[in-house]
Length: 306
Image 1: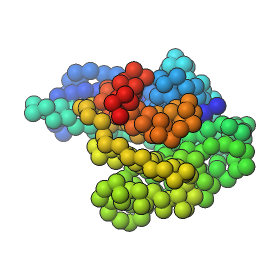
Image 2 (image 1 turned 135 degrees about the horizontal axis):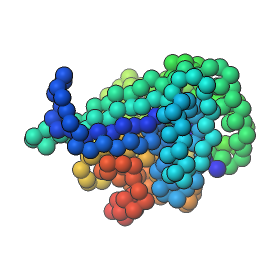
Image 3 (image 1 turned 90 degrees about the vertical axis):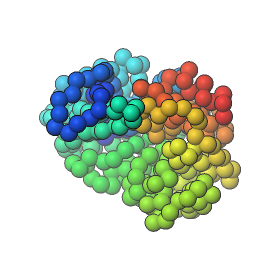
């Protein structure tokens, strides 16, 4: 089974307006409430691609109840840890469009509830039920109320169980787990440059530094490059490169999570790195070209062009 962890799940309140004016009154052109949080996004796209998973993380209050209801309604498995105080966060995503057609996305993300130590241990105890052949996907930042080394603690406790770890995190969070040999990591080109303190100019540079991450412990390194495409350096020595599929950028939120979901779905179905890479690129692009997370039809339409 595939499990996704989102420490700080959210409901994303997406609103569309005309040109944004600081301090002005705006009337919405559209409004939509959807599930939010990086691991949550991964599970939703996996489900859209016909792959089951179980969402986990921490929920609280009325927003937590609505989040769980929507997850179940989407057909996703859930095993959330419930907190007695606070409420799960709401993130506001403002999508404005000027008279010249220029689109700007503004995000206001909530903080979320405090997570007490005993609830962290409850999550860890649940994760210890995972075993051989399971896939655990860790995505996103760690809330301030959790220990900064939470990812490391999870991977350390689960070593030797035959679990495949997938980690999509930034800088220290990512580098510090490499010693546990994650199956897949997914930095973007900017994060890759920050990790090594260098300038990444092209895909050749990406390959060089992706291989350095492998030397540090990663098995497969998938690097997203926005409008410049993507690169995969696989553990069998193969390298794959793709240009960015053509399309209109509509929504950047969730594109990276969709790439992770596409890769995992492609690999679990085929066991082939090239297929997994193309599925990752297709899913990430399909979500970027859509108002919501990609459907299977949208993903496969792009996949057939690669």
